[in-house]
Amino acid sequence: MSIKVLIPTPLQKLTKNQATVECDAANISELLESLEQNCPGIKARLCDDQGELRRFVNFYVNNEDIRFLQGQTTSLQDGDEVSIIPAIAGG
Image 1 (cartoon, rainbow, N blue to C red):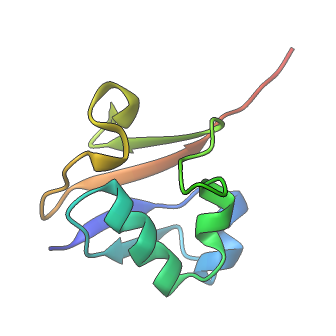
Image 2 (cartoon, rainbow, N blue to C red; image 1 turned 90 degrees about the vertical axis):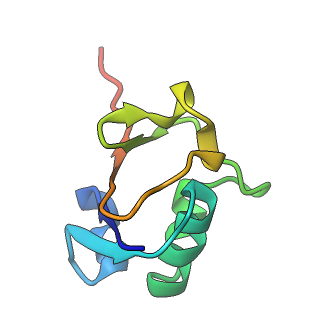
């Protein structure tokens, strides 16, 4: 099952400057593990010490925020697109 993952610019140094990567995963948790295997160090940027997604990182599956789906257990299908969006604060 091939999932297209859109990588934000600040994390592209971990993906050899690739803006998109392909992963095989059945849900977001598996996707994080697949990303870590292919891009060592990326999971530490996305997850806390307990393996939970950091508050300032948003994941979207086909433009749907996973916080309003099933979070890290959100199912993925072949051909899905996952966007990783770091939160931006301003004032």
